[in-house]
Image (cartoon, rainbow, N blue to C red; front, side, top):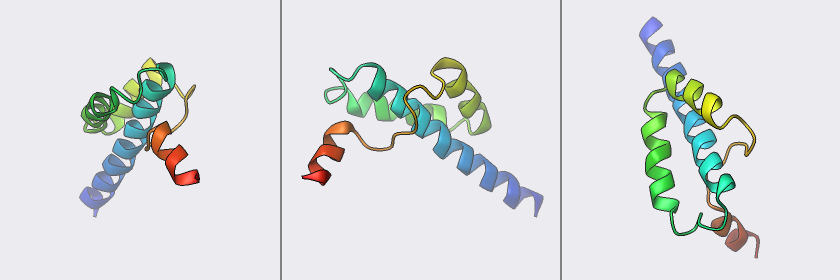
Length: 81
């Protein structure tokens, strides 16, 4: 039971770390966000693998200034039209 809880916490922290990291990269450099989206996704996924450590790193480096983001700005604009 403890392993299930630990895995669930790890997954939730990984998703949170991914959202924070991807939001940071896409928000900090919006003029190049479209061209570097795949790189930003790979970097965010790499940090997300760390689970709770990834969340700590994401909060330490970028904080919540740009919020959680899971989709690029261009995709959001296409969905709204």
